[in-house]
Length: 562
Image (tube, rainbow, N blue to C red; front, side, top):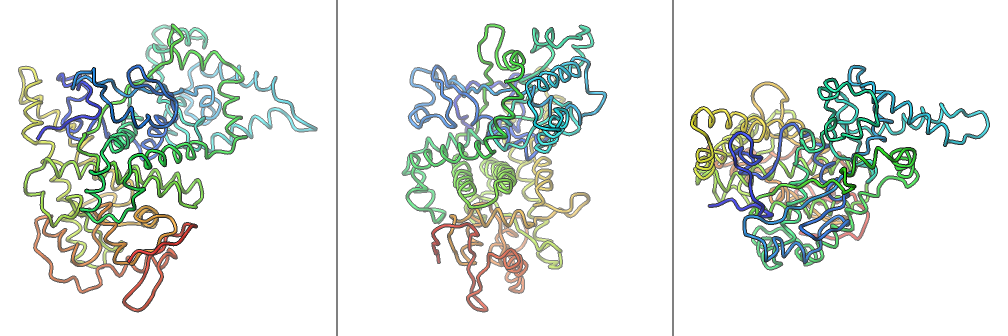
């Protein structure tokens, strides 16, 4: 079975330097990568949505391509394996980053040119700020610097320009910019203006070290899903008993809803703060923004996205539903951002596992494994249920083995050996070592631990659990805002959306899928801890000793699903 890329761009498979040569990229797309943090997955996805974009000769600035363009991508005149990529033009926001992060960065990362430009920026701000009464401009500047530093998202140990803001608004979302200190030392650069004249020599914009393309891939999964015929989406939704309405299976309505919520998320920040950020970045000094966002000919700098597996559209569809439900829930905007980060990480976990099921071999393709083809046996957080704990551990190990096996699919191994040089065995060993660690099963394990879905953080005996944040995510994404569903339906939806098993029957299926025995019973209380967590979260409505409902805490019209 061939892995078809979307969009159907030409893949770079040249040994030692092609972007797609790694078996993890060949399997999952370009690319999910261990060095990208959970926050940066969301930052990068929103960066693509917020930036000006183009596909071939068609340019647009709204969050998503038009549906007609998506359906006809690649264009009819393009070769089947050489479609135009999606390109976007992110802003670097260097002045804003310098103002917010330089004072809190490590001393040895503050180059002379950076310090001098920072001083010039402050002097220009002093000249343009008017203060009433006894308030000094320096007090205002310190307050503003602390304000923007408070929006620091990730990268506190990095050079100031490689750090990222929390994606609270479009002005705070910026491209990855890396400082090339070696080049600056070699050329004895001591002036910011001279540095800007050869900007791409001293700053790198396309190395994808921290914004490592994972967010781009998530964005492409949404685009890929929107291209599917409505009949295909409806058929698959019915097959897995997803419980969606007509609006949630119609690509046209999904497209319109996603466009709306992307705009709302990008405009979360208060306008006064957005205008301040824009003023510091471009209003005080304009040359930096001009040189960082445009090339020597004055043309915008565009970055080309990679690709995702075309067959991964079901994962993209679930992600779209969950993204929409989370964005329309009546919750605090900062909590929404935190949960969106978690959702992006869950989508990576789901993508790694669902795609691995397709290529790991018949041993992992069992109907007992549920709609997604895999099962996470979720154990009680305190680990008091010993049988459940052992099944959960086997479940984690089975996922690791599955991802390991999928990356060694004969089709992928054949491409690797075909593209290598003379020393094939040595190259194959080294590339699989990197793939397992940074793209494959070790990345799956590390990401699960970062999210709190796999414990312990260190040592043996890794098992699946959920914490309060993950439970909150489940409640807000497996049902629509304002909806009430039975507790039994809630557990089934968790299995359908995320592959999570909580009760005896599905835990038994997880045991069989993991290579263990079928479990007749776990005592009937395997999920009692889940009932207690839902009750503590205030979302469980007890109807009787044996019956309960789970209610979305969001405001809205209440719906019931039995």
